[in-house]
Image 1 (cartoon, rainbow, N blue to C red):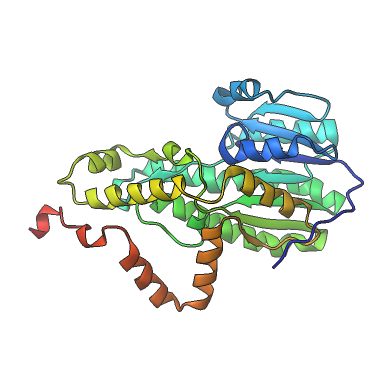
Image 2: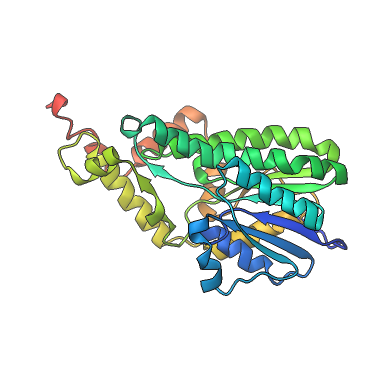
Length: 304
C-alpha cells in the first residue's frame, strides 16, 4: 500500500520520541527538528542526555529534552504529564527505544528475558496507555511502533528479541482495530538491516559470550556464523538511519497510513516472500540458507 502525504496540517503536533539520543531515534529527531509544524519531546536515558548537547540539539520553545528510562513508570508518567500540562498532550508517539540480546534459548537467564520483554514490549504499551486518553479526547493521534524484520521472521541467536518484536506487532494490530473509531492511526515500522554500527550495541549474555569464544561449545557455530552474517549485511546495507527516519515521517504525515510498513529493501523482500511462499517451504528455504548451517551442532561433544 502506498503512503499518501497529508498536506492539510494547520495544527502544531506534539511528537514524543523515545531513544532519541542515538541511532534511528537520533535520525528521526534530526529530521523533524526543522519542521515548524511540530513540537518535539526528545527522550533518552539520563546517562545519554549529554549526547544531545554534543550533537547540538538544544531546548527551545518547541523542543523539550527529557530523561526517560522507558521501563520506569514514574518517569513515563512525569514526561507525559508535563506534555499534557505544557502543550496539551502527545499527538504522535514514536516508540523507538529498544534493546537486543543475542542469545540462544539455553543461554538466557530469567532476568534477561524479562528485561528484553520489558523494554521492547511492556514499556511501549505503558506509554501508549498514558497517551491514549488525550488522543481520544482530541479524536486524533498517531502511534508509531518501531519493530524489526525480527517481527516478521524470527532469527536464530536472537530468540528473546524476536519474541519481543512479535509481541509488539500483535499488540499494534489489536490497537489498529480498537483506535480507529477515534481516528487514532497505529502503524508498525519494520526496519531490516541498516548501514550503521548499531549491531555493536547488541548485548550478549555471559553464556552466549562464552560460547562465541569457545570453539568447543555446542552453540559456537551458531554465534560465529550469525555474527559474521549480521556484520556483513549491516556494513553493506542500502538503508541508513536517515532513510528509515524519512519513512517514519511519511507514515506520521500520511492521511491513512498502513498498519505495517517495511522500511528497508530486505524488509520488503521478506514480507513479500512470507506472503507468496507456503510457510513450511519458507522455513525450509531459510534454514538451508543459514550461514555455515552444516557446521551447526558439530561441536556438540554429546554427538561425537
